[in-house]
Length: 92
Image (cartoon, rainbow, N blue to C red; front, side, top):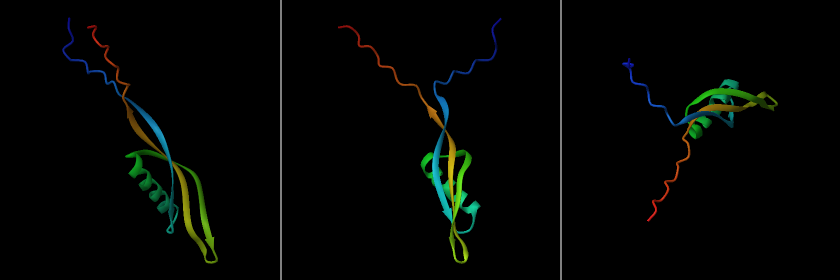
């Protein structure tokens, strides 16, 4: 007995999750600095899937906090295709 459904063709491309490190700064707060870092990463790697904050620090002035900084690792997916095989030349 044959199956009525066709099997999906196996994809030859694999997907890998990569990390991209970047920093963001803002005067408004930690959230704004994080958004700036993710926006910076988006322009380089595409659509992020996760963010890990690795470091936070602030610049101080006589009036208080002058600037917020965050260092983050942004995770994103990247498709990887196998290397192309070279065809053997036919004997002449």
